[in-house]
Amino acid sequence: MNDSVGEVTLVVGDSDTAIAYGSGDVPVLATPRVLALAEQAAVVAAGDLLTEEQTSVGIHAEIHHVKATPVGGEVTARAELRDEDGHNFRFEFTVTDGEETVAYGSHRRVAVNRDRFIT
Image 1: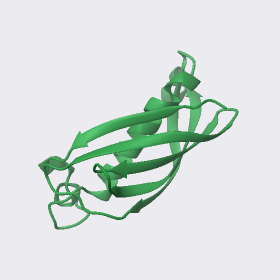
Image 2 (image 1 turned 180 degrees about the vertical axis):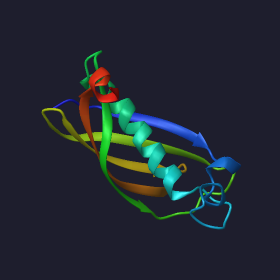
Image 3 (image 1 turned 90 degrees about the horizontal axis):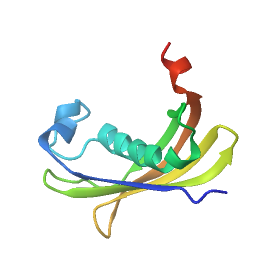
């Protein structure tokens, strides 16, 4: 199996908060934004698994958001490929703010032909 890993980092801004996303009323990193960050990391990890004609699309996610991150905090999402079955990929991810876990979970993506998918 391919040892595909992807990482992305975010400095939390006002547009990343629960207030901005409408998912809460406090100025901390929103769970939907955490999930988007985890998906971005999985996209990076899936890159080497795809042909030029392919892209990957998310089909399932499970997330546990366990720690608040204030505006100005920096988080890094890391997604690791755990299972590959044809065009289906399963990743496990963690989001950390240095030493502490902010969120963790799993994410499934499937490879599709880019042109056929958008038409």
